[in-house]
Amino acid sequence: MSIAPVIYVIEPFGGSIRRHNANLPLLFADDLGVTRGDGIFEAMRVEGGQAHNMERHLERFRRSAEALDLPLPTPEKWQEATKAALEEWGEAEGKCTWTLTRGRASTSIPTGWVAVEGIDAETLREREKGVKAITMERTWQLPTEFPAKTVNYAATMAALRYATKQGAQDVIYLNGAGLVLEGSRSSVVTTKGRKLRTPAAPGILPGTTQAAIFARAEADGWRCKRKEMNVDYLLGADSVWLVSSTRGPVRVTHLNGQKLPKPANVEEIRELMRSAL
Ligand code: PLP
Image (tube, rainbow, N blue to C red):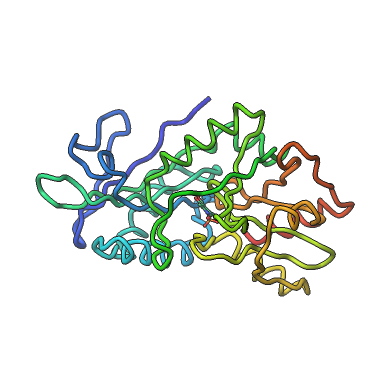
């Protein structure tokens, strides 16, 4: 059974919040978020009536707005709307998305809303079974000085459709020099012994989940750092993971058709990563 999303609209410039009926339209046809993909978002996991890792998401949301010259979101308003939506949503696990677009071309007034909805069946399957991934060069990118989480995912969705046709479920992006960047909608984390590594290269979106996992793992005695890595490095790791707020840790079972090892302590690693979320 799918449960209808809960939506709260945030009037810009510190204005009021109001509930929106999810069965009614929300955007105008000239909203630049739709016509240009000109907007930002954050997606976080909710459970037990709480949004997880909210401080890290607020900080990245602010930096994304700054990068795109959007008005800086007022944290209290987004927190208030999230709280209202979660009171209605209840305790169940779900996904809370904050979206802020440049708004209508005709008014230049930004559009912002919070939506809480269920976790889709595909995500639940991936958490359990892992994903087959293929690598692909990322030929488009925001200026590397301004990594922002934008709503412009058309190229990503095309890459994912291509991956599906190749019998895979996800894409790991490389840059022109063959360095690993990130998953299509996730950060890459590898393990080797008690070491965790995440790619270092310009233009990677800083992942809140990767940051939370590293903080937790370091406290547990793992050694964690960023490292330049290529495809051979991934193939030689003990395990490769795609991590994001709503998916959590998803193990990469195959890369470019090659089966990746499953370490004996795979459940320990999964539990470590999960406990950080
Ligand atoms: N990198 C990209 C390109 C993403 O789209 C996402 C999430 O959507 C992430 C990384 C992971 O971010 P987070 O862990 O903050 O959810």
